[in-house]
Length: 181
Image 1 (tube, rainbow, N blue to C red):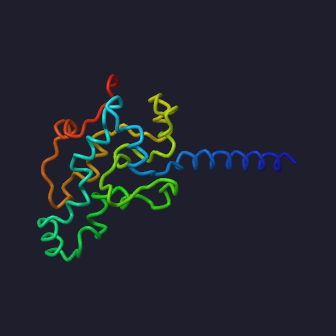
Image 2: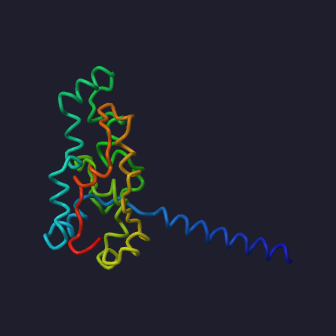
Image 3: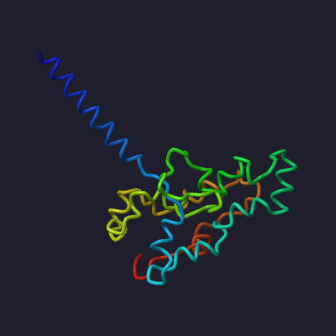
């Protein structure tokens, strides 16, 4: 009888831990259009506009440059805008598990390297009630990017690699919320 109770408790505990773990990995990618909703105004810091003008937003388009096309031809990659080797760093959508895309979102390849490449999938932290509290946002999937996030793509494996100075590069993509650190 004691063994049965022990097995039952262990089984319940295992199920409980499984669901906690499952929930922690249940954040979904929603796409830049969802982020834009709150991050386009001057009051919020115009993050969407800053991103839109930067190289990350044009990352997919850069694969159609002469330099990219020549590299792809030389290395028998076909169209670099369709080659997984290139897309993993040039389009958020290509770099993630497709099961992690929120069906109510609008994540697209054309976004290039979008918000969620650096900040993590936004399905849970996008809610205003959560975004107002940094700790809550982090607990709900928000990533405050560090150098290691950038180095996933900005490294020697990139055929067009240039020395990567994180401190300099991060100043080029900064998009702070006014009045917050």
